[in-house]
Length: 447
Image (cartoon, rainbow, N blue to C red; front, side, top):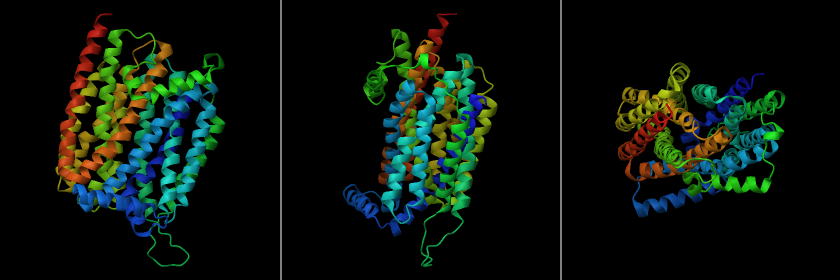
């Protein structure tokens, strides 16, 4: 089987399982608030309430802060584990580490399926899931192994399409499965745990393990592998050290001009995802609070956004010349600013869905465009390193964003949070413009 086709199918299965929970999170937190037997939920909730009395955050937004903490925890663990998994794959090959990640993901979904009335087990599920999500970064490494530079953009776009389809179908499946009711043996009727989504996620993860075991070849040949575990782990430390990430200490043979351009790209990546991921995470709580969205309503919203992303990435991004990717980058950052303003102030569902049109465009365009131009710098032996830095910076931003923006959402309310976020997006817009100008000037010297 073609490696790019394998990556597409494997990632799609993985993302279908991963996105099942997206429309369910607000209702899941409501469920644990009523029925958690571990005591962990009440402990964290009491801490939030005591902080609320001190700071003055509205109680109705407590769940959003709770969700933001969970979202940041997941991304922080991914930020820590991803470089280590990547470095180990440089020594032992992509295939064994990919299969180990899928095994960890399957175990995490098993814990979700047994987290009945037990918030502690649910948190354990999120921890294991975050630690095992290195398969996504390994997918980009595998694509890099088997493609030439001029075809790499299409390979990354294929990964983006898998993400789009996953975000179209997965949340809808999760919402539909949440409608299937299961009651405990005592038949009390007050039970709210949604059993079928985690079971389906577990089954999908097992299918992905079997599929990958049979069809994933080793793409990193032995003579191209790193030989020193110690040196590789030292290198991995650079990926979890923010100073090393933004100074590109681990990248060799970059001239001063290239480092300057890449720093602009790195800061665009960080500031955009920091703000975007934070507001993105609060979207489910916004619709839950303002419009009383059910899990099915949430699923329809994700379908609406994901379908637009699929069309944009499948029709536009795959066909446009890579020389215009920086123009797409700037258009995506620019359009997400009014998108968040419209969404934050929308008082009708029509207004909400109107704001989600430019939001979907930005979601589909910004990061794929930036990653493609970012990876065009450096020599061929450093492409994987640059992409690893890019992914680590993105993971760091996603680790900080949900917690920060959820706090603003919780403390100041919906409109203020989305206004602040939209204003802050002017930072990556300015940096993106500088990145575009420097890229253009640098390349013109070689023409």
